[in-house]
Picture (cartoon, rainbow over the protein chains, first blue to last red):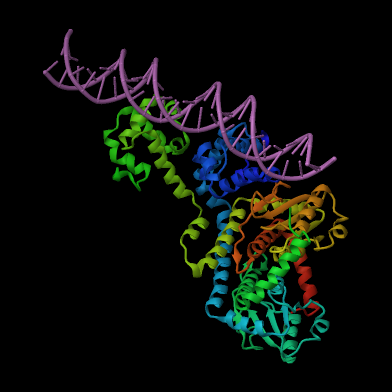
Length: 280
Length: 280
DNA sequence: AGTTGAGTGTAACGTAATGTACACTATGAT
DNA sequence: ATCATAGTGTACATTACGTTACACTCAACT
């Protein structure tokens, strides 16, 4: 029983999660979302809460590698005791290092939600809904945001294209006045991205920009832009704000498209089912 | 029994401390310096620990105003439960529909930072630093995380490969025991992603998994996994946690690689300069 | 010194909890 | 459709837990 020492309960459950039966899985879900059930509760109480019989609880404990429920409970309690007695130590170790980054990231998130509150994304969404084609362009630290936007928008409407790094000319040949270009770029603005935006604008497309301030070259290119803050995480700029903005924008578009988006998502889902995309 | 509600155990003991007998005082001392004795322990255990008899424990509970030991224990456990609920959970209880999305995302961010605090990413980083090649695999709602990780890791070390959706066989032919695979997948686990992880594991590579709980198929595949929470933003699952995890992991790796990473970044930067990547 | 009463431990009781043996049910393969 | 096997629940045995009744000890007061 060496394997279980020093492991958290969730880790233990993880090592056997593929061998769990249906009811055992229900038990696992219950104890994971309410750990006090295991720490304080009796077999009978847990069984009743999950809606199963007592022996199933005992067998669950056995499958985790314990001799019985008592041992499992003792293990959980040990983990809780460690957790309870230690907060002071934890603060000293990693906590402060991570703390700075944490609050900066949270602040960045807030800045994205501020954009939502200003109604900017409502405005963006109107253009996206009405567009013929949608083009997405992105810089380096916002690449993930570009992917998220492309992936999300593709789920709710057709004709969404992600502009490749080195293929602006090819990709944009078809762009026109009825189209919308959504451009991400921050901090050290990429020549290629700015070029994409300029090209889109010159072709008559409506440019929507998500960038980091009024001094951005994108801001001078369109009246439809919004500002989010981009903190540094380690040596690089975070793409979390870009991703968040992308997802909130997708959410707004989905809401505006209503049934149309629903139908499209349903079609995609049934295709996924048909092709056994998911596990198991 | 109104007096005892909402009072901590130590407060309760305080109100009767002048009326305690010698052995009761010893009991009080014991439970005050080790509260888990009361929360988890039986009458017998506590009696033995203090060096007294069981009835004295029961009388102690009675003197605090409880009907018996069981009631006292229930009271202590209630107090612990309140204290145990994580800040993420507490956010959920303060329901505010407009802010729901925001606080869920913030809670998700916190869950990623919890992983950092547990030192999980230090452990991950060690494997990544020592790896021959690094393979990154991802599902749908974590695709952006995969890109962020690939992009970030590529900046600080060589031989980082993103496994394509439909080309697992081609991509993984070169994988071997000295390699590390980093796998993202959440919620509705993708068959292709799980397959990638399984393949990597069977080829002897170390698999690091970032997923949403111990019931994930990834958790049963490797002991190196961590849990982040994935909220829904609009109709889809958010990839913000995945991206955040990716960036924090990259940050840790960069820190562990020190000069090696610095030199590599410098080389990339000078290449960028030479090719006029940035605007203006 | 005797007596009283609080304080404490021993022993016994009833209840509730865990664990196990066995029978039934559902599920998947032949 | 039938059979085999894994999964689940029922019933019972066994343990241990909390509680209470009772007896003993020690200290203080008469």
